[in-house]
Length: 144
Ligand code: SF4
Image 1 (cartoon, rainbow, N blue to C red):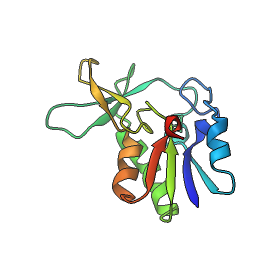
Image 2: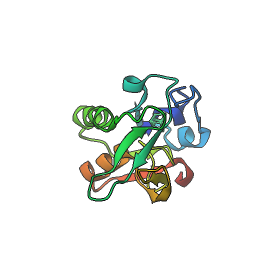
Image 3: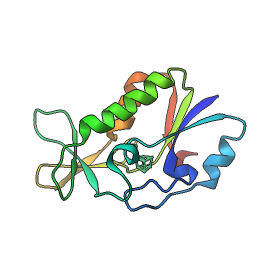
Image 4: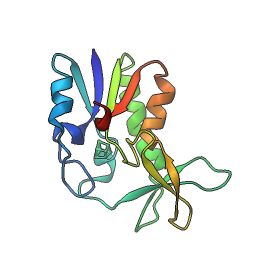
């Protein structure tokens, strides 16, 4: 089994504030698997970095915007995810970090153009992984 894992769940300090969210249960669950660590944000945005949010604007695809700078980083995160997909076309599963603007699966806060919460959905990387690997299990750490 080859499984992509959000790197912060494995103990990498790649979250926006320089921390990790290590989950021993995820490691135990994946014993014997080939683990592919993945963080779409840190390589292109650095660590620490400003917080980012998924923004829904009517008529537009969801985009990811810096909370302070207003910078649109959607394409950068999509490119990182594309690289994962190209390098590992044979993934069997993925375990992603909940609530993240990149990695969340159904738990990512979505805001409108004024920063008001309008619902919850998938992060930008999770969306691409779900589309590209329609058959595999993609879960977050709370489901392991
Ligand atoms: S949730 Fe995803 S993007 Fe955020 S730090 Fe973890 S691996 Fe990186």
